[in-house]
Image (cartoon, rainbow, N blue to C red; front, side):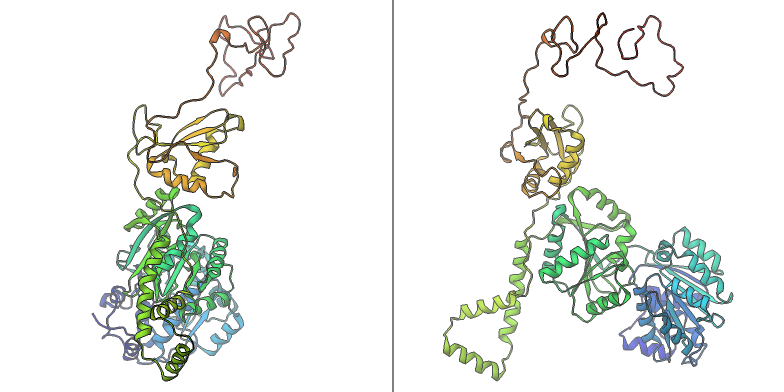
Length: 618
């Protein structure tokens, strides 16, 4: 299919942008059966939906003419969930309708409402905005809905997720009932289907590319990383891949600010994008990415939808997304318009199972492996720098450069290898240094064993480690187990038997995780229990097949043990002395159990001794 059926003015705009043939979603909305009908369209992100609905609404706007009428009250309204997406849609529709004389206005939160009011009073053919600001313009009378012929809801599922249901209802209720309604959404959950049923008439359901399935042009990779080395892995990954643009996603604003500051300090041209920034700051950051002044964008999920950066080749999930759909939307910032892209999940070792569930929910396949090491980055640098140096040396030099070079050699003769080394050094100088990170082995655990060795870690007899804390230091498995997972970057299944003695504790670690655990335990800890030292009890390669010997003292024979109470048969237990009253039997140490549910009305067993108030025999 081609663009032959659309007006010539729009064809010229598409040709100037290099559009030779429509994408699948564009072909679907331009099909003969879709003309003039309400549409409910689901398609994967980055599939050309903006141009698709821009072409779909052309018959209502042009009404058979080649050019639009003089601007007045808007003929179409496009609602988008975020400021960035709304402004991006405005930019796309501006170039698409420029040859037809189109004027596009915007109504976006965070921008000057007075300036937007002036635009609307001056006349526009299409207004693009966010739900809250469009509601405000409707209530104030700045936006006249009487002339509207078509309304488009872009990323409708995201608008409902962000809580804009009431605003959408307020907008749609004010529009003329005979208008045409188009809904575009990555997925069509039950809430979107209900919204379509309420505000659309006999809508045509179009599902293109599986609706929410993954791009075929995106390669997914998952890398196991120690939790405290996530930032180092981000540095090495950007240095190794060296993309024109990279986007790094974090879960919170604080994490974005911290990672952005650290990357900028290391020498990366980076910008931050999060909800705490003003609209002006966000637009400035996006512009820096588009004009090449910045190469890395650190963002929250506010940038997971609607951000279109054509040169973006790498998406890094520094923190795992909350669900599979968010994973797809984050990754969809790359691999757009037929361009290849890579999406990398940095997975802390204890969260591997969560990452596997996210990948499964997104219905993608990810290749597992370690994060790039500093040696791998240096090896790749050597290849790039050699190629770059060859290009510099083979480039024809100007006469001024040759004169300066001859003068330099006359003053101080330099050997050719020294000149080449100096050139390499100059080319390497702007590059941020790679980070040393510990290798995380991605082996899968074996099936859990049954029998007497079920407590041993999976993967064979484990390696034993000693902690300098024992029963006298309140060592307890309830806090030791999570502490070991955090400190040693382990999962609970990689920890076997825990033996708590008086002055120390011995822990068994799975053989394949022993080196990783030892390396992590040697790191300086900034958390609580930083005074706990962890040391291996034997070399890893010669790990004993036997459990370490117990060092507890042998318990005395039962008849020689001291009684729990004073009286005939043995001395009292060390501690606070008992003071039994005259003629009274010794009091018991155990407390009287509290009656449980349903015990209030039970009768005492016949012949059982009655207990006194203090637990003694009455």
